[in-house]
Length: 607
Image (cartoon, rainbow, N blue to C red; front, side, top):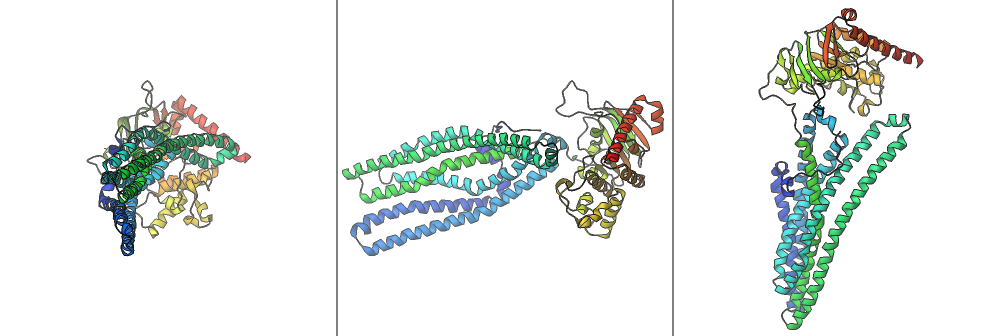
């Protein structure tokens, strides 16, 4: 599993890193630009108020003309209302597009997760992916709608306002700008510290989400072994680590805010002293001095906001890095450029000198699948047996390209499975796993998951559903509160292990593939139910090519032939009776399976 304890920021600059969002934001750029224009309009109106105030103080107030003072007040009120309207327009322009970008990124991210190979999901923690899917993408939406627009507008406001400060006296403008200059250095130091902390915090939040998910899914195990306190202690340590990182972030933000508040105050004090001195010399009048400080006050919020908006931008940059880490993952299992089609699959499955090793396997280790040659004729049921670690489960993942072979090839009706589109291949090759995974949907939706061709609620769909449930001996579904329309709990945990396996088997049967790969799908069934399922499977499998991983002698009896897998190689293929007579290793494997089945029966009797 990938853990993200250390920050892993990309080598791209912040601008280029955030620029990777452009393909998602491009369709809504006009609306975002209008939002920025509205925000800039609001800022310019705010900057206009000191100019109007200068005229009011120097004219009507100095002369005592009540009518002109009233008109001046109306002018200020008009500017205030116009500014409020521009602020409202800014929100109206940007909120919809920002949520649209969030939707597009989230859809693309989920689609990417679905396309990435099983090897990717083996390496990555689900909590890390979940935190990217929810928290990081939501952060990007908030940044586009608020942070980006205000950062651009406030920088422009500071630039325009700084120029206007020189309108009244060059000395006052110079003092204000020179005093504020250290803010840029403080911002540079802030980026160095905060960027790393932001990445570390978001990664640790992903680790914490993983811990919560694992605890919830494994709650029965934790309770059964009395390890709830241990899980809590582990969670507390992780939460404390995240808390410390967040405190470091808060200190970094507090430090930049310290300078953002202090330096403008110093600038105000120095400008006030200089302004009084210049007024005494007659180089500036009262109206100009009031307007200058009014302008400086207007600029205070944009200057103070830079620290917050800068930290927001760095958070968004980190979120972008984390999201694109998934988008940038290499996906070797893709559709071919010129795919082949099998119109009427017969189900001839052939392994030709197949090799496989995991990417992280040491170079000195042998291939896990080390030169397998095996031929399954159309309609044949082949049992695959071997000791633990011989590679049985790994071999079953290759026909459907859950993993790709690293040597040799697997063919379906003479066509390399890599020459078929994944959609077509997985329509022809169905699977049922020992670890049955169900979804938080109805029984009907779970069983008919692989039959998109059926019209929901049609007579054909109902017939396929009932046949599959009958084969899997899953009649218990009719006793559920809403029958086949009952919504089962997350991962089917409200059902027993045997019930989950029967529904998973029914799902594989309902798909009606040309090739059916069964990885010990009956392991959780009692002996009586297993016998009933096997009898029903014989009827189904007579027209389907089946590769069945057998962990019980009774499962071997389903097969026309048996393949013996030893240390990643097929060392014998034949009928069960022939292999018992000719292969010492096969007799050893069957003996171990019989011992295991005897122990299971004894446990059933005890229960």
